[in-house]
Image (cartoon, rainbow, N blue to C red; front, side, top):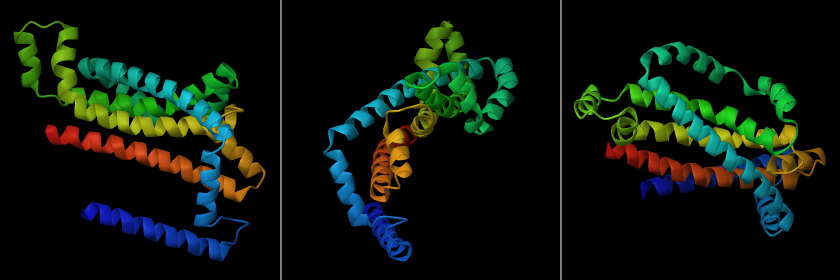
Length: 244
């Protein structure tokens, strides 16, 4: 109950600050909360918005699938084979730290404009936290579990499927949660640079027209969708960590 009250107070403070900023800056810089909500409702009622939203979620879905699958697979390999992990970990951390915007010209050169480029933008943002936290999760598994697998003479696949994955699942899911959020960010940024469809493209077009209410409404809708998804994933993440 207290957490809900805290959330309500936080929302009220944000709305009050938003309205105050609108009064100070004026409608040329920012739209009011009420005007933004009306514009967002109008967008949700239009078919054009959902066409662009569908394009974004198509790219986002493929990017998440690739980032999570590859991230977990590579993280498991690097976590299980310590020598490979020690060699690859500095490289992975360096790639994770590189500002992804420096890779955009390369991605555009390879994939051109369109869906593949948006997927690639999403993947390069989301794969690294999944990979790193999966690797760390496997490394921190109790040695007793590995000794038990050897005593039972389990194959490598059986060991991974029945012991290592369940034991490291909370850490892996934390990586997946962070990776999904960053994948969404990468997909939207990709639509700013490499697409003529999607919510990112719609946002860029609204900004170019200096349509402040539409820009604010799009930002609000994207924030709301990301916040709801993030809250759901965080609840699952906490439950998994609590269960262990």
